Image (tube, rainbow, N blue to C red; front, side, top):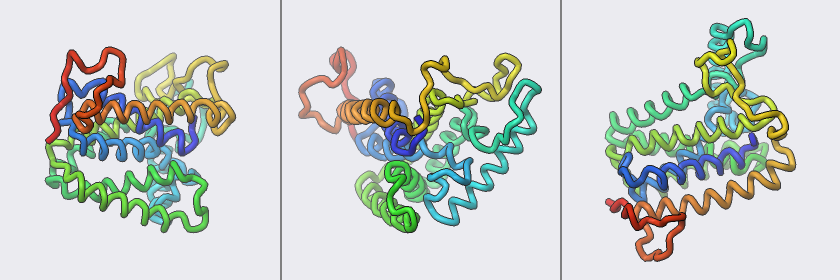
Length: 278
């Protein structure tokens, strides 16, 4: 489950699940605006780990800038892998599916996002939105305008950023929620990679069977080929339906659709009322 659209949609679904599951605890002030902005950031963050591969589609998101960043990330990832691998770890490159494919990276990315939004009193948020919007659009439109996609994606990302910024006006009190959105997107990426043939070393540096870069994965019979028929005809449609359902439930949880009288999840919200917007 590693194509761009599948990753992006999985990030949206993961964020919806977080809001639905933890919204009752007011974790990060889940307002309707935060739910929407968080969905964009989670979708983009679900592509973020693949910036460690200079040949990946997402590395072309912002043209030469993202390509250069991808090469730098790949170099660092390779160095970390070669410097920490044990004798039982494979003698591979380590640049791709290395450092950025670990929970450690997800936590650092989430904490960094929270810190930047809080420290700048939200004025850095448009830059972060532009970046994550670009990754999300690149993931969803991975075969779109292959020769001029950087300009098209940058323009689309700028438009989405302006629209979100003018409407959302998300404040620094929402910073923790946005950091959680980035973590959710990254973790969704790891889970998607884990069910492919290569697995994902998401638990580094926890030693498992003498390996620090243990590729977490289900039994081989349950693994799928990247971009194969199972992913495109089964996983992607199911994830899309889940993302739509969970996003609607998340907005209901945040109080964005008080007129919606039916419950979107088993058990409803009767025991825990929606978090008030504002």
